[in-house]
Amino acid sequence: MGDADEMELIYSLIGYPSETEWIELKDSNSDPERIGRDISALANSAAYHHRDFAYKIWGVEDETRRLVGTSFNPLTKKAKGNQDLLIWLKRFLSPNSNYEFKTIQCDGLSFVALIVAAAARQPVYFDNVAYIREGSSTTRLTAGSAKEAELWHRLQTEDFEMQAAEKDVASQDIPDLLDIDAYYQLVRTRRPGSQDDALEEMCAQGILSYQDNGRYTVTNLGALLVGRALSPFPGLRKRTLRITRFDGDANLEILDDVFFDKGYALALPEAERYIMSTTPAREVVDGAFRRIETEYPQRAVRELLSNTLIHQDLTDTTAGPVVSIYTNRLEFSNPGVTLVPTDRLLNARPRTRNTGLVRHLRQMDLCEESGTGWDLAVAACEDRHLPAPKMRSEDGMGTTVTLFRGRAYDHMTKAERKDATYWHACLLYARSDSMSNQSLRERFGLDSSKKNVVAISRLIRDCCESGLIKEEDADVGAKFRRYIPSWA
Image (cartoon, rainbow, N blue to C red; front, top):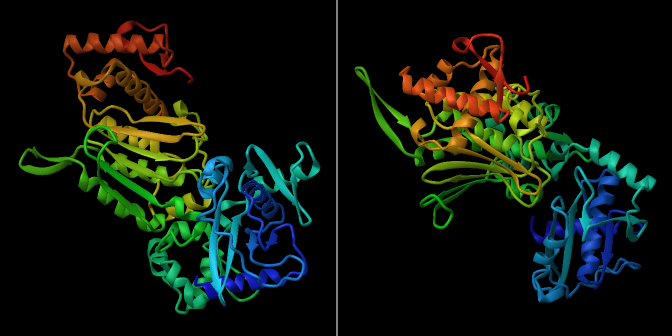
């Protein structure tokens, strides 16, 4: 948008008869504490009143609606401790806050528009307190009140994927935002002959929604799937996939830092190719044939990459999906904790936050069905006798999955061997089978020599004592014992 288009926003807002719960007009007040409280209140009020955004405008007299301009500049304004306002606000607002300041020039006057996205999943807090608008006033959201209960109800039933990424888009401008041809190619459906018919079908699929004024809303789902770029959508800028390649095993020196600034259906194949092209590979002779074998199983990379995108918490504005490439490992990180306990990722009923994204990417063959991505990643590592993928998931820290570069059994740590044993038992249990000394030796690529049989027996015993696995039938002889996960 240019300044002229943004002035249209101001003109439309001052057309309302008085300040509402989702609009506030100011000619000067720029107290940082007040701004922080107002962001919380406007975000919560927008969610309460089913608005996608709420607004605070500087440069307009509240009573007369006269355009007077403002000297407030959010980029130079200081808060407590002489800290920049924007940095200070980030410290005290909860991670799910999503807002943007825009400075607009018109007829020699300066205006500032604060555009606040509606709260998602939970209220927005400022300094650990939730606020809301009551008429034209900002007040505390009283704990235990009927209004708080109703706000929580509306937040829990709101669907982030169906919220607006961009509103009031003319039909002729949609191809600039979304790759319509790619969408129809990926879902393997012939594109309708007319633009209007194509857009109508995309509305039916939740990619767009039709407005009463004849324009369209691009939904978050549509932008995340086939957006030509995510950065033009204020609420999705943190969702851009970033891949960083480091020199060595620590994040001290960056070799490459690449952003895949486009919808995930477009970014996933490109990102996978980039990862595989920047990680080591070697030529392997197989009989009369030669083939290239990569350090990391491509199937595991593909599944973990897609999981990083589809299982992230889209409402967390503090971080986005990141892949870090080190010389000894790959790390796939995203905001949000797993909805399934990390030790039950195999065999547990799949759950996801982003059902629309999963449904479309599955239809496009870009992710697996029924939460089997982790199973496939584990199996791919087993086939290559590699350490099992390792997952860490913690509130406030997000989720990180590590894929380790090839290490044979003799070079694995004790913890890595026990992890691999546990996931091997889970994988077999998912196939209605159970683990044995022989199957575990094969998993590690070990032969049947006495030394290896004894070593694997000792490992199995350690895993039983640690509570990772248990005997399937305690009454059978030692030679025929088989093992299953401890929770089975």
